[in-house]
Structure formats: structure tokens, C-alpha cells
Amino acid sequence: ALVAAFLAVEEDAFVAALAAMLVMKVAGTRAGAIAQGPGTFAPAFLDAVYALEPHTLREEGRLA
Image 1 (cartoon, rainbow, N blue to C red):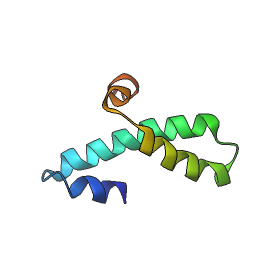
Image 2 (spheres, rainbow, N blue to C red):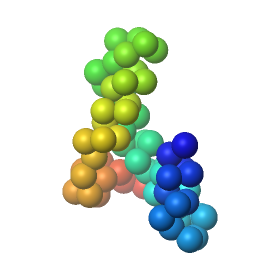
Image 3 (cartoon, one colour):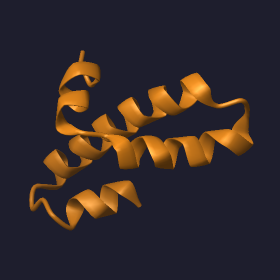
Image 4 (cartoon, rainbow, N blue to C red):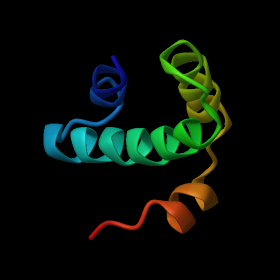
């Protein structure tokens, strides 16, 4: 669903997928740090996606 959302605003499918994966990486890392199990990860992930800001992606989204 996240990739589809990015595809809705970016014509280049590769760029859209890459951006979505970057968001998933940062939000997933943040959610994983506070989740206490699978039942708490999903809402923590959604909250992390909602709270992301451009500077957070630049700081925490290092691509290697």
C-alpha cells in the first residue's frame, strides 16, 4: 500500500519504490525499537510513518 501511495505521486516507478522502501526502513526501525511484539509493531509502524519528516529521512535513511 505504501508503494502504491508513492506511485500515485511519482511517475518513475523505480524512484517511487525506492522512496517507499526508504520510508519503510526508517519507520520500521523506529517502530521496532518500541514494539513489544507483533501486536504492537503494526500500530507503532503506522505512527512512525505518520510522524516522519524530511529531515528525519535524511538523517536516519542512509542508503548503503
